[in-house]
Length: 288
Image (cartoon, rainbow, N blue to C red; front, side, top):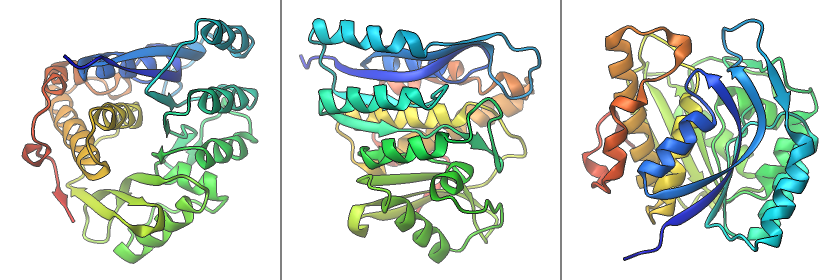
């Protein structure tokens, strides 16, 4: 029997709304990965559509927290980082990556729909660039790509050539691979596009957009992607699995008509991740 893979997961914990650690932990567990959280902040809810949020920044805990892990000589198969509450936390993540020397997945959580999250310091994109330079895989959305590249945000539909150029600019930050999520295309579809360093692998998975936006889908995508990579799947297969799973979960959530700010009802499809099925059977889009 194979040993269980392990991942150190650096993310926030939001009590209400499906995102961050409340998504990451069950998804990775369902995929046979032991997820060991490094909480960056605790919030009563996520920041998308809720007022009066209670929160605490856990930067002061991260140093002794990770020092204890060092004394225990903890070893991980992956370091997966997401939301950072402030710039100082980036150095803790980099230190963890240098120590572990394993698969590094960076989801540069900073914003969505053209806006940076209001709770974040304006210097956070520079710190996320440092993490991206040390990453094996990064998973920005279009907003985060613009912040990482210090470029103006545009929601305009893209051509394949424009997406290709954007992927290459993101790879120039230093990551080995980039997966760009939820890109509007000229044919009316949405795409998740990926490229490995040097352009050795370039692909897109296109799907029909749903008429509603849910918070936390980026966290869900990066979590399934990380679990698939730890299973030994290649980048293309991992993207297909993540995109197909999320699309189905969003369809179900949309059909139920639940409140969007509560996030995607992934619990209804979580069992699908337990089985290492053939990625070619995953529905939800076309690979190009």
